[in-house]
Image 1: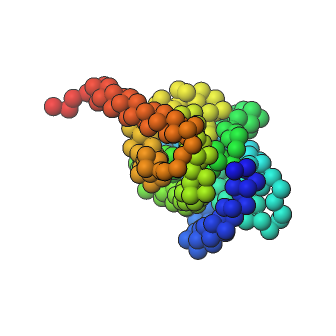
Image 2: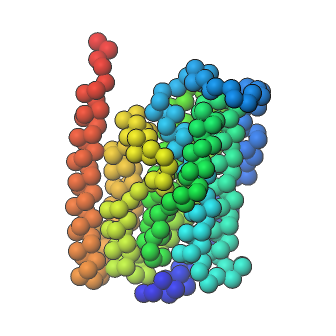
Image 3: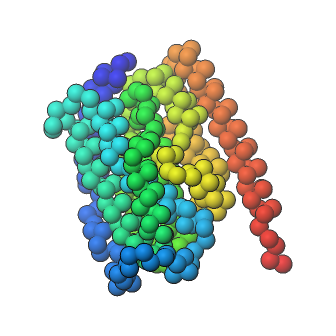
Length: 306
C-alpha cells in the first residue's frame, strides 16, 4: 500500500481518534501552575547559584533535556506535516490533528520554561545558549514513510510521557511534580492517538507496518539527539532511573510492541515482513538482556546503607 493509500484508508479512524482526543483533553493554563511568588528579578551578569535549587545533576539533566526537546517543536511540526499531510486541505483531519498537537505541545515548553526560570533550577544563560544551538541545528528524527512515522511517534510520545513523569517524581518540590505530571498527561493522550492509529494500520497492511516497526524499534532515538552533550545527559538520566534500558524494554517494547500490537501473532505477513518480525523479536530480547545487565551494574554502584 502506498503512503497516500494508507492515509486515505486511515482517515475515518483518525477522525474518530481526534474526536476522542478532544473529548478527553483537559483545558489548562500554564500560568496557573507556575509559582510566580518564588521568583525575583534577574540582575544582568548575575552568576547562577545551583544551591538555590538543590537537586542532583541527573535530575537537572532531565529537566534540561525535557525542556529543550519541547523547544524544538517547529521542526517536529514540519516533519509531521510532511509525512501525514503532504496534500491535505485546511480542514483535513491530518492537518487539524497536527495543529492541535502543536498547540498542546507548545504549552509544555511554556510551563516548563516558566517553572525553571522562576525557581532558577537551571542556569538560564546556559539554557538559552543550548536552546539556540538546538533550534539552529534543527536535528529531529525524519521517518521516511507514513508507517514509519506512525510507529515512531507512538513510541516517542510514550517515552516522553514516561520521562516527564519520572522527572517530576524525582523533584523534591510539589509544584514541580505537578508541572511535569500535567505535561505527562497530555503526552499520554498523544501516545494513545498514535498507538491506536498503528493498531488500525496493522489491520490494513500488516506487512508494511511490521517492517516499519522493525526499523523504528531498531533505530529508535529520543527526539533530543541534537541537544548539546545529549549522550552525557542521557547516560546521567539512565543511571538515575528516570529513563533507562529497563524502562524502554518493559514499558515501551514489551508493553506496546509485544503486548498491545501483538507483533508475534500477526498473520498473513509477506516473507520480508516475516523476517522483520523475527528480527524485531530477537532485538527486543537482546534489549531485555542488556537492560538486566544495566540494572545490575547500577545496583552494584549504589553504596550499602547497612
